[in-house]
Length: 221
Image (cartoon, rainbow, N blue to C red; front, side, top):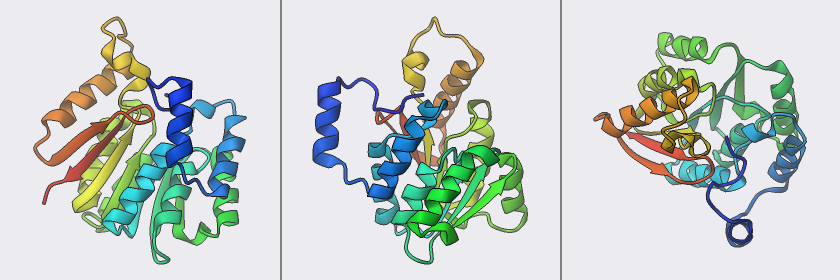
């Protein structure tokens, strides 16, 4: 995992942010608080969040999924980009981490847009499918336990509409996916997942080398 874009020297990374980042103050405050957290490496980068917000606005999305909330940056950045009637269905297991998220959602005035489910994400996704919500989501972000990436992807592919977009984080896995010496389970899971998406005829995809690698998968019509 990485909380800055991989492969950029600090001077170039700082320049990139100085000429492109338009981060609302509430997001900057959340990011600064999360940087003090023992699990701060799980934080997405602000440039990645800004890209996601741009995509939300470009698609005119209204209904979205956030699988893996942590302290709430991804949910907040999406909620801020959504129209007033927009909705984020957010999935996480941790009351502790999401307590921080709830506080910032409230401060930002978007808490009413975010429906948080504290439960295993697969259970939440299965429940959404069972309640006839397949093909109703415009956008989904997957950033949770890597062993379940394929399971999350398959359920999410059912839930997003044709022409909807799935964004999947950490697909470059701090560069370990390109090192044949790295053979741990999580690295191999992500390698296999990347290969699967590369060959999946149900989507049009692009792996963007931003942050720790972000795959964008457009569900074909």
